[in-house]
Image (tube, rainbow, N blue to C red; front, side, top):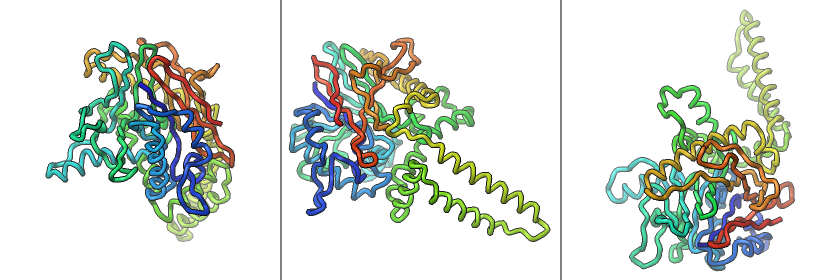
Length: 427
């Protein structure tokens, strides 16, 4: 078996270096780093594994993001890079998973005259490359694996979903969708691949606080991965698709995001001042309520002050070497890993004889801060499973964007039976 792992191409973001638009012809074509990517991943892979944020629906409308993605996947086929895609959506392209589930659970069933069925909020992918394993190969947990289509070619594990045809109606490419985890087990190690958005507060906040506030009514006990995904679904979908498809609002929100990240608060302060004026007019009290109005003005002023302090104090997860070492991030990692072990335990119970051990390494993206496979001093985290090593090693895929005019750096992870894992740094 042979495969490669990348993430964070962000098709739709104009600073992506894998695909670009030729200004003279207006055509989409390979970007400055595509040849290095192509050399690193090699040819004739069984799978190209995409660990999230491949499209950026949070800042780009569908038509723009898919335009860049189509050319990329056409080049994947043309250059014989991979037979199939394993796609693990992230936070910026989480809508891919929502659409797949809607197609599977609603659209396909209604077309056949059947009523919709429940979403599968979490479906783990498993790659088993152990020599003596009875489950050797790739499959999706909770999904029936189709072996051969009528045409004789391999079918995607979900069966002909919409993204297969991004390369053209008559020349589809096979996509397999897992979310949010892919487990890879070999004779030497067990590896978890995930995007990593649940290590950041926004993407996990509903799950964290709902479990504290309404645990007795939620009746979930110890939260597993599927429950974590379910509870964080509303905010995740809003920030992914809701913002990117908001028309005139999209560009404004993008500019506010950039201002906040760059600590440029002039525009945000202006909007907060206007908001105070609007609220002040809505609560225009007569003279005998003078003191009440003064108290309200004071409170609004303090709220604005706290908002600005909070924004100016935001520390970026992207391009940050310190992010993974922060206490709150370690706590979220602990929770995410624990939820993943509950999922893995269920997989081991369902598929008799598979016995996947707790991962000793995690490959993730999201932060755009590369950490190679052979990093001399990689970050390590405490685990929660007595069956695993005491600490798990973290690796990062980096990203394919420019940061203030400079390429941020990517890491391409590769695996081949008999050779094991390695990675190539793209700088």
